[in-house]
Length: 117
Image 1 (cartoon, rainbow, N blue to C red):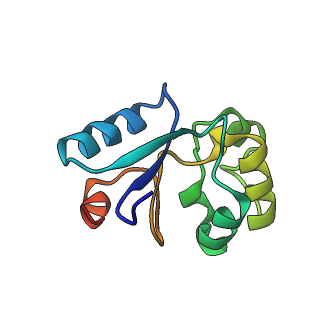
Image 2 (image 1 turned 90 degrees about the vertical axis):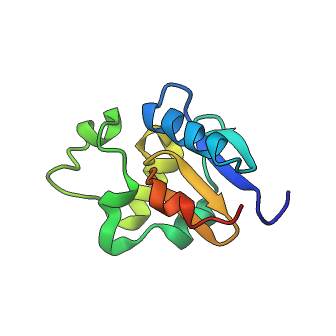
Image 3 (image 1 turned 30 degrees about the vertical axis):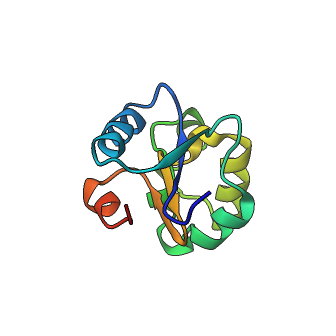
């Protein structure tokens, strides 16, 4: 894998993932797709990048587990959130886009534009 190559954690039915892939394709970015449900991001990556002070930014509020746990009322602590993310990858905000030390949760074109081509 080159330093410029992007790792793209994807869910085939995720509309935001589809938009992000179109954007990456149009921008001629080099990326490798990984199915987030089969192979979620590793724990050490989540530990490093999930911010305890802004847990909500890393969670998919549309996921079943988010609703079941009523995280809209009370967000989990970082350790619980990461445990649940690994057990239920649908809880992870998608896509997860990684290039070197840059890790993006969700898709914003401006953030992707900051990646190296």
